Image 1: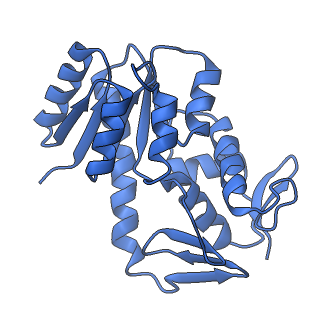
Image 2: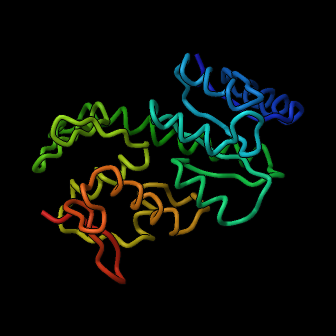
Length: 231
């Protein structure tokens, strides 16, 4: 059975084209044409990927993404007709894993999807083989196999990329990673985004795991160099 994908766009011709192309690659595709329908399907089903348009009836894509992130860390690629950098940053800020600007080439969409899913699959395959499945750092408890994080008794809902960033930094304490290095390691060398992607994800990560993000206990900044976990 192929990967299950949710495609959300109010332009039915675009949805039809994406659905046809993905099904040619053996994927299962569900479709939604407004924000409410997208949320209902995301809550009722387990998807491997969501392609989410920004301009939608009922709820726009940013609102849909924020609500999805309340209950799921499913990878999400935003589709937007706007090339404005602020829209891209806002999408990442809401928890998107990637973004593609319309008009797009479906081959690029599929390449981005497969890169994200390939990394996710590889992570799942290797986690079970690793030693130290549970990492405990002070009040923080990281379950590498279950890809979950707790601080005290509180479960922290991280996106896939936020978890990857935290795990990399925590398992390499005191090692400073440049933004370029983090982009290459976590997102992959083929990722076309820029280092602002890293900054947005680090900020979101701090908002979730730090009691006071301006005075972090876990994710530190080495000014002019990069980020690190201080042990």
